Length: 116
Image (tube, rainbow, N blue to C red; front, side, top):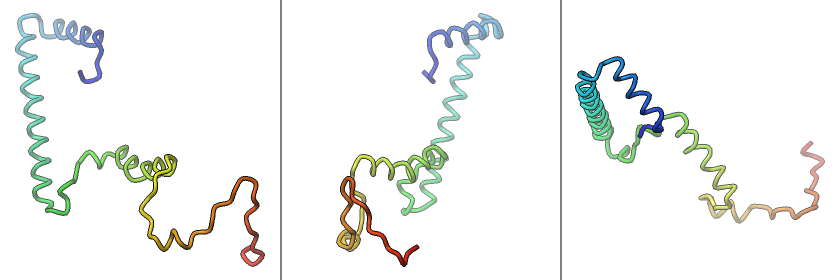
């Protein structure tokens, strides 16, 4: 639950008992649950409104993709992982036909005097 272990939950309950007291703690927990539910509902409604108003070209838009971690992982690191895993990327057939063969182990690449 929220990445909390049993000890952390126990500490939060003890702090809640000290702050609110045993009589008001159930009411505070109920109010906190109700507030959390309302916040989730507002976030889901805002997400649905955003997707509906952006139009069909953004039908698969996910706001979590705007998080910098997710953005970098999706747009930069996925390409690197595909290269490392050996999966083919979408390359045009003309680029595949004109590519030079890869060098084997110990082979020296051709040297071009005019390029340097």
